[in-house]
Length: 155
Image 1 (cartoon, helix red, strand yellow):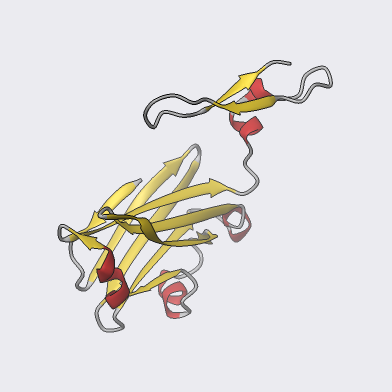
Image 2: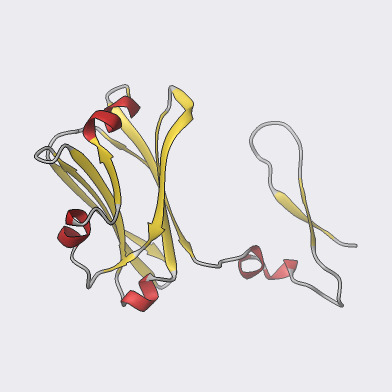
């Protein structure tokens, strides 16, 4: 998901995210008092369930595509207080002076990804499993533009 932060002053943003039967809460907290931005993801569930999910944050400047801040961590359970997570710096932490270097046209662009640990291509696409002792082969498709993807090739 791509979002922009337009306000670098005291701010709290929460977003509910649904992935299958799982519900997550995305937190973005701007603290002027501490001069930091905190970003965390919580699973509405147990610590054991949350430990099976990872989140990844990418903060970047659209004008400088090769430069970005990247952070990944396990998701937190909702039983864990977001205040404790922030206080312990257990989540993504960007100093405001550094975050401001990513501002382009008055906004800081960021993306986040939530992934289940060990989630493989075979789980996503049952057609690419081993059949008859042959391993599935994957080849990247060339072509024009950005629409490159993997395609199954039968041996």
